Image (cartoon, rainbow, N blue to C red; front, side, top):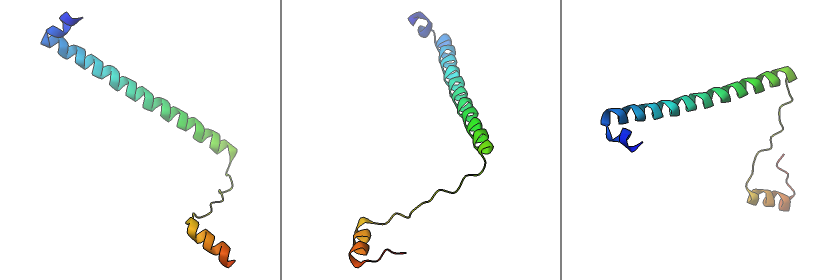
Length: 75
């Protein structure tokens, strides 16, 4: 193997082949992620619309303690 890398012309082809393999692996990985996301979207569309999640606003701990001490719930 080291004899291949001693020749600059062959070393360039080896580097190009390694880069090609890495790029193909990257594109395969992106394609598989896209396929999984498409499957999840399909499953979510089959389930129908869901109720929106209940989200409570985040408040600093000090304000929560003040509201509890004052008896004010903030609503």
